[in-house]
Structures are given as structure tokens and as C-alpha cells.
Length: 358
Ligand SMILES: *Cc1c(COP(=O)(O)O)cnc(C)c1O
Image (tube, rainbow, N blue to C red; front, side, top):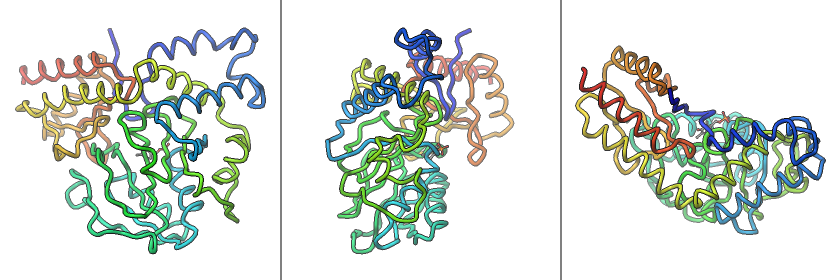
């Protein structure tokens, strides 16, 4: 039975990458030592991290005045790192409340003593559409504006970035990083845990504009952007394996034709499922059409018991991890970069048959 994994993260990885990891695990480059055993101070690893950085730069067209940093601590770590490093002038940030992860980012900034102004929220609409900027904002008031480009749990995404005037834009791209094209230069800071679109859990990528990198006192070293720039992300032991595996995925993404091509495929994949859901008399997706995510698609029959039956039936058929997030219920299909079109087709065929039988 072919298994397709629709998990929201950690998530499915490309088959050729898993094969390569398997082949290279006992001995990397004929050294007789595997990636799980080598020093982060070796020339072997230097080459791995520098290649990964260059491949990411090529894929996202990242200009020279942006640094690429590799952290531990996940997207959640960056919820602290961003305010600690950047909210130093006004100690005040703006936030668009588009869902769970935006809320979590705001809570962490507030927890660190930063004033968080929620400019707009769609909480009352169960986050079924995106909050829009109500008024123009200025860097006279805010250190930055935080947005979540793709809302992993609710299934919305900013395909066009909100107007942010001269205020630095900080983007949590965790769940659509390299899945659709964004202009890096629209952001002061981008971060993403890799375990959704790029690799195994354990490393978080931050891309930061040079003028925002400055010495800040009394913050933890392992979240210090200035220090990580100086030390080429090796202030302490980095997550060696996760960086290596992410590097292999970045190579694979390049082979697929880069982000424009990946986005085209992701649009095709998501349209296949959305078109089915919109035609279906049993299943539906409630998200406003223009705000729909390419990577995370929640759907439901509207009946919790029937949803449970669908989840059981899909699991039995090798269509795994379709249970929706507990805060939303229903089902959710995560169609990250490594999910092939054939996987989405298999899901749609299955749901179509299920509907006919009910
Ligand atoms: C998963 C996710 C996070 C949290 O990531 P961790 O690596 O688990 O800390 C943050 N933001 C978004 C948008 C996510 O999807």
C-alpha cells in the first residue's frame, strides 16, 4: 500500500532525500564517519552549512545585505528572539492576529515586556479570513509589524503582504516557507522552523536585513542575532543532522525548478482539493476564497462523528494524519512541498468514493 503523509509538521520529506540520507548515513563522502558523528568544526560540515546557505540564497533570491542564520528552538524560539533583538527602540510592536501562531507570537513578546498592539483580528470569525490593516502605521510608533504569512491551523495565507508603510515587517513563514514566492526585500526578518517544508525538526532558519543586526545587551546568547551573524551560526553546537538534511531538501527544491515552479505545483495540488471540496455535497472548506492557504487545507463534513469515520477510513487506506487540529476539529490536509500531486489525487479519489457511499 502506498502511504501518503498529510501531517502538519514534522511532515513528509522527498523520497530521494530519504534514500540519500539512508545511503550516506554510515559514511559521508567516503570518510568512514556518518553525519550523526562528525564535528561541527570539521571542514566537512563547514561545506554542508555553507552550501545550504548558498542554495537557500539562490532559491529565494536573497540579496547580500541579508544574513541567513540557523537557530535551535523552533518558530517558538523566534517568537522570543524577534522582540529581544528588534523591539529595542519603542519596545512596542504591531501584530495582525490571524490565528493561533500569531497569538502565540504576541503572547511571547508581551511576556518579555514588549507592548503588543493587535491592529486587527479575525478571531470573532474563527479566523476564516485574514485580518486587514485598518490604518496606515509608522516606524515612529513601532519597532516592527509581526505577521504569520500562512496560518497552519486555520488554513489561510497572505498571498499579498499587508501595507506596512515604513514599519519593518517580521514574517513567520514557518508553514509556507519556499512553498510560494515572497520578496525577501519586503521583510526585515523572516523566520521558519524547517519541519514543515524543508527538513526534519531541529533547525530554524532566520533571514535578517543587515541594518537590523546590532549589539543588544542582556539577552540570551543562543537567541542573539548579532552573535550568530559573527559566529556564522556556530556560537555553540548547531543541529548538525537537521542542517545536513535540510541542505539535501534545498538541492531537491532546486532540481524541481525553484520556487516559482514549486508554487505552480502547489497551486495545482491545492486547487485539486479545493475544487473537489467546493463541488462536494458532503465535505466543505469554510475559508474565504482569496485567503485560502496552499499548504494547509482544513475541511469537514459538519458532523463530528462522521469526520471521525472519515479519519479512520483514510488512515486504513494509507492516507495518514488527516485529523484536524484540536482547536478547529474536522480534518486537515497539509500539502507541503514534498507532497506529490499523486498524493492529493489519491486523497480526492478516496473522499469522492466515500461521499458516493454515504
Ligand atoms: C509550527 C509553527 C510554529 C511553531 O514552530 P515550532 O518549531 O514548533 O516552535 C510557529 N509558527 C507557525 C506558523 C507554525 O506553523
